[in-house]
Amino acid sequence: QVQMVESGGGFVQPGGSLRLSCAASERTSNTNTWAWLRQSPGMEREFVAAVTYNGGRMIYADSVKGRFTISRDNVQNMMYLQMNRLRPEDTATYFCAGRPAFTLSKEPTDFITWGHGTQVTVSS
Image 1 (cartoon, rainbow, N blue to C red):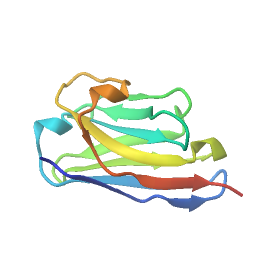
Image 2: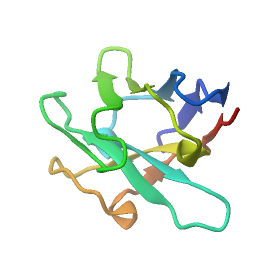
Image 3: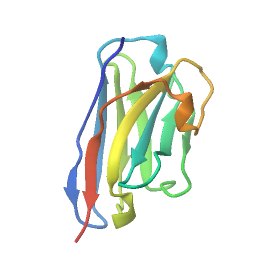
């Protein structure tokens, strides 16, 4: 079972930037499509961004489009989320997740492998 570990979260003021990383313990089919999702207290887990295996196609939630950029490095088994112009409503625990299908999905239940999350807090 592949293990995924997120890092890079922290506290930042509105308008600031953070770069999240997700490290997979090995290359498996469970990361053919790789994604970031987030969850705030009392809220359901929501989709943020996803990337195809070759990195050629990405999709984003409307709320982060133009501010966040997802990328992956298959040699290093790493995935990243560059977050710019952060807003207080971006505050959440951010999870990396993977699924075997090569098609992109925004549905949290489509992802079968999850990390434990990293906390992002945006506040003045």
